[in-house]
Length: 168
Image 1: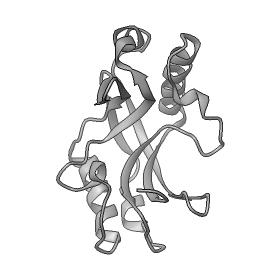
Image 2 (image 1 turned 30 degrees about the vertical axis):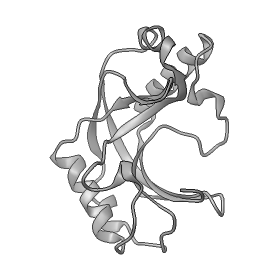
Image 3 (image 1 turned 120 degrees about the horizontal axis):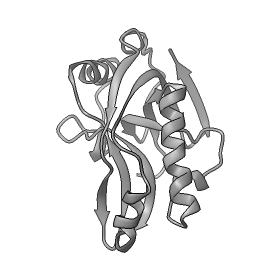
């Protein structure tokens, strides 16, 4: 998609810390990991919406629904050839769906990235990109069990302007 604007759910400090621990376990074992991305804006999140462009929007209605409890499941992989994205799926319950729908209601119609389209949204927290599938079992063995946490805020990231705006 090139330059994009994303709307993301941010996790509370404890949940964020547990995901960062997963990143570190993978990195120490020599696997692909988001720990390698040290930009201040790189933090665990759940992507809600991605578009090539998006006007500034008021997300007060969505922010008012936060915090919401989130269940981060046993790691899964989205395969791409001999590599994949390792992620913790997030159980889609009524509260999380209400936040997703409030975000969508706040934005004008537009073309969504496939992974955030209403018909195929798969909420998840990414642990690693481009993980070699041959090392998947080893990588999974390094990660902890399912966990419960909280989504506590929203942010907008614009890759073209390299800006991040936090809401709520």
